[in-house]
Amino acid sequence: MSPLNVESWWQPFTNVRAFRKNPRIFKRAEGCFLYTDDNRDVLDITAGLWCVNLGHGRQEVADAVSKQLMQLDYCPGFQFGSDVSFEFANRLMKYTPDGFDRVFFTNSGSESVDTAVKIAYRYQLARGHKNKTRFISRERGYHGINMAGTSLQGIPNNRKGFPLYDQVDLLPDMLSIERNAFSQGLPDDEAGVQNMAEAFEEIIAKRGADSICAIIIEPCVGAGGMAIPPKGYLEKVRELCDRHDILLIFDEVVTGFGRIGATFAAQRFDVKPDLITAAKAINGGTVPMGGVFMNQSIQNTIFDAAATNMPELLHGNTYAGNPVSCAAGLAALDIYEREGLLTRASGKIGSYWQDALHSLKGLPGIIDIRNFGLLGAVTFAPDPEKYPTGVGVPIHNECFKNGLLCRPVADNMVMSPPLVISEAEIDLFIERFSRSIKAIL
Ligand SMILES: Cc1ncc(COP(=O)(O)O)c(C=O)c1O
Image 1 (cartoon, protein in one colour):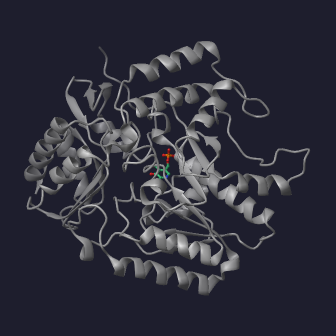
Image 2 (tube, rainbow, N blue to C red; image 1 turned 135 degrees about the horizontal axis):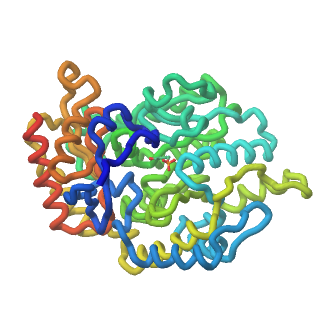
Image 3 (cartoon, rainbow, N blue to C red; image 1 turned 90 degrees about the vertical axis):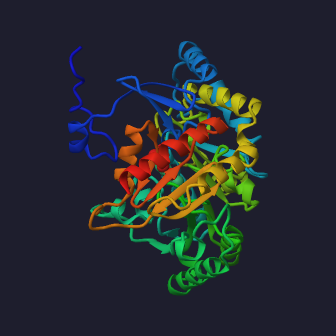
């Protein structure tokens, strides 16, 4: 067999030149495991990229997709619709927080973020608040790679070198290892909540509440290195938004669909945002899909201000709400429901995960371990001389050698296993991860 040519595809977020020297290729996947081209099993402790929440290779989803492809593979969503797309939208409303009864479908988290930004702008405009054009987001936040999402990001390297909106102010990082190292679940960190509230008020004082459209934050930070809100933090954000008439957008692209023990973080924390962005696990991470969820009052406000002979929102994609992604979604919801996966992370497996992860305390280099639901992260002491881009990458490489896929973010390793993970698979993760850490540090 001739070797695979790996030159033509320019992969996302990849050091392509390094990859070409040492390609890492997967051939198949099942349950919590991926298999390489040389047939090694690799435990997927990241659910792909926080998306394969049902585990890999679910027959029911494959059957639904295949059937839908032959029944109605595609029809335009502009001025038309398929029955399956409406069925999926209607069914999703059973899982959303109370009062969320509308969804605008997209194909990815990035599209969901940019869609939410546009809907928020249009809502403020429709209310007659034409000066409410600014956004607040947060250091360490990740909101995808489209231009609005890039502008809203709090990860400096991802922003560098692009022409961005300058209409964004950042709240301080929610992660404080100094105050909260080795917290289990939500940290007790009144100072953290206070810092955020002061920074929020400073932004209001500087810009004026009448210039601010919305704030977008991840309830739990994912891609930026995993951070969990201190107790009372999200409640305080909601209170400040209400006080200053600012929309609250929860970016739930990671936290949505069971990651932290409820369908959405909004439900787990009992804090209601105005808009929710989702994607990834919305259909088990099988076929690209996303959506922005809202209450009909937001839609009605925009509709009431719109001309009646035009689309109310001149926005959308070729594949938004396409029948195949929606069929995958319906099958995924059946599995989520039957196997109790949307709440599983807040039960026994979540406690097992917490205990297992915190058992790593004391291994070389570890300065923090944190967890919530089926999210986890370990932070290593930085060593900029030896590892200028962070300690995560060399440990990640060693993990891959040892049959473990986890995600490095600078000096952190972040984890988000498939929600079907077993206790034995968590034990295997701990064994392979500790072995990899000891080999490097
Ligand atoms: C919170 C959050 N928002 C948005 C995105 C972007 O999603 P996508 O990669 O599907 O465009 C991500 C991706 O990781 C994310 O974690």
